[in-house]
Length: 428
Image (cartoon, rainbow, N blue to C red; front, top):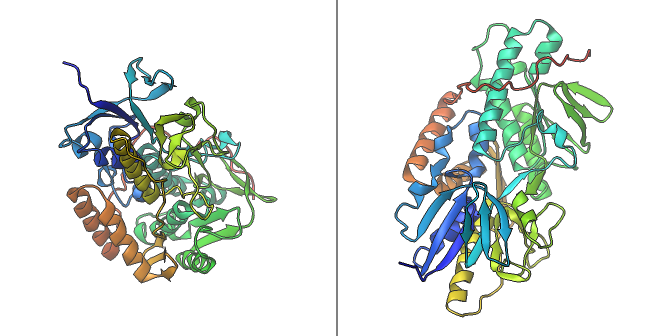
């Protein structure tokens, strides 16, 4: 028996794809949601998994479980490798071809190394749970390697943590690494003092958190420094390898370098015959459709969209959610042969945590920092987590960590080394 309903194919189970799927729950359509992974990830808390504050299931939930009650959706685990726009078909890596009436691409973003992809192995970025678990292993093993080091030069290299990129992710990583070394690991080692670890945040621009008002950027810098983080601004990293990094004329031995500096759109955008910006994002129409193909929409980090003030819509969760919900309304309008207003992004502000009792918040010009901002950040992130269990577990874990400084997920597992250990440390 054929299904006469229009078929909506949504690629990506992140904020944009999931919000579009949910918004179409009562529409007379059938939906196929395709993702390479079986879970929705709450990316704003990914750094907490990377730094052993939370476990992977605390910030992720299976897509099938989230959508189990939505009868008009089918979840498909797979990777899109081709798009035939004229035939209205997508091709999967396993060879299957899926027809669509409407297509939404919301596959997110990946790391960008500004033409230095060779740095990726030695400076991993943070976009997926796999990335987070890999970084956690590198960080925890660095302390173990330092404990076993035979020379002071080797020990110092293992105890140097460099975070490249002064945006929210970089600031959060650096602040948390400082807390781990000075509080969490205290009195757990015999040959090293983890508090002597050097944590450096490197930003090529003149200030950290460049998207925040300058006053909040300065407060963030001051809070980072109080936590023990060295903040280096105004000089880009020139080279990275297994031994360390080059900053200006100085080569700094560091066995743990983390990348939080660049973002590029998902390669999926390249499958479309559509204009893209320098970051690979698709330049969409005001209704988020692809030029020449009104049945194809792009949302989230893969879309290049301008606000009314001429500034691009930031690549943050609220933007992706709003785009996903808008695409659902646009599809509903098309089905009802109604006009749809252009997409308008509502900017509710920015917030970033720096560490324990330290954060900055900018809510439409209302700026505050410190403990109050930190509490606001905690409440906002717990509120937006998907699922009651996730909220409860995260609240319990954070409460325990607040009073004890302990991080319950400090388990090292996996088979990969955190870095090549055969590379000699250069003499000081």
